[in-house]
Image (tube, rainbow, N blue to C red; front, side):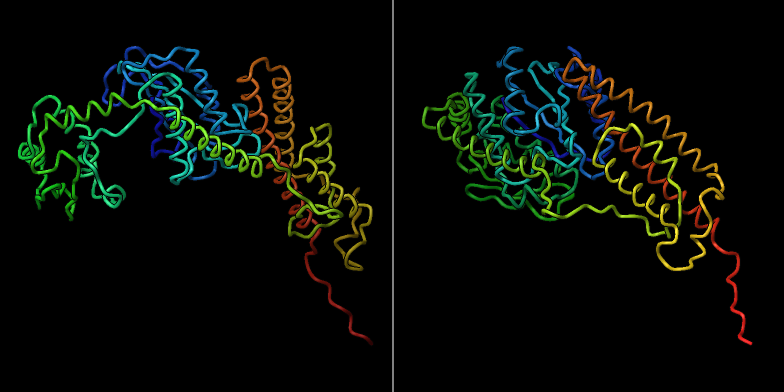
Length: 447
């Protein structure tokens, strides 16, 4: 078993979901058997990804098994449960969404993961695969522990693969050369094991046939200049040594690959390291996602009012719309705004003395414009949808139904708050325009 994540995560979710669920693979060959949804809801995953305003929106990866590794359904469920407990402790499936699709068309079992980079409750960004060596080591320890539990051989690098320096791994050198680099480590060991490449000279001929130029031959390396690459790359490893016996290398490599089981000391060391990494991540999640924001004693949160002149504006429509709404943080702030404007209604002369903007009583004002009334109607319709979503959440029978209902309710509340802000801005602008004097009266000169 191996756990691997890919360098994808931007753009819309439709292409990623379609690739996982389509009947043909990337080469156009039919998948048999067809992909199967192991866990999650594609529509909910797409909703969370597409509504994320950030550049990086999701993580994609795979938990793949060898051809001779046949995990049971119960074992797969335990792996996914432990995956949540290890990499998202304190969040869980109700807050960190995950779509898991099973592929078995290649002869082995693969669980493909698509994970939105967002906490469904706080709407904060959460990356289950943060950059850095510590994160990579955590995934290696996770797969090592589960290979040990299931009795599978550990994942190790094939000794016959080409070895690249860290510089060569990171520096891009054109699409063609990168493709050759990636395939080189896979094709060469296969050809050596099949007996099609028997020594270093045949290996050099194999590379030259694919458009590569050999710039230097050392005792234990060769330097290769790939197509579209200005500088040569040094390839090291047993197969690139001048006097290597390829048959002997194959026997040694197979012995290494087939005897990679952990002893008790290795298991204990990996377990302690993985538990420490999980605890570190749990503390991070607790402080960032679960800990309430600290407010100093005696301080109050004041809402930021618009910068337009607040006249004796009426907020009767907004108050009526907010009536019987669920108590949320945004609802509290909007209620504070309503109270602040209502205080100005009760004290129309507050502010600058003699201000002509405060002279006209509420009864003499004109009714709201068509734009304001249209937004009010939209709010009324939206409130009916919110009520329906709250009912769906209360009646949810399964965890997936609850997650879907919560996501829909959060989306509707966000839309409502935006409309409330729009209607408030429109009403203030309208009243300022209505009550602004046409001309500024001049003072009479004294006699």
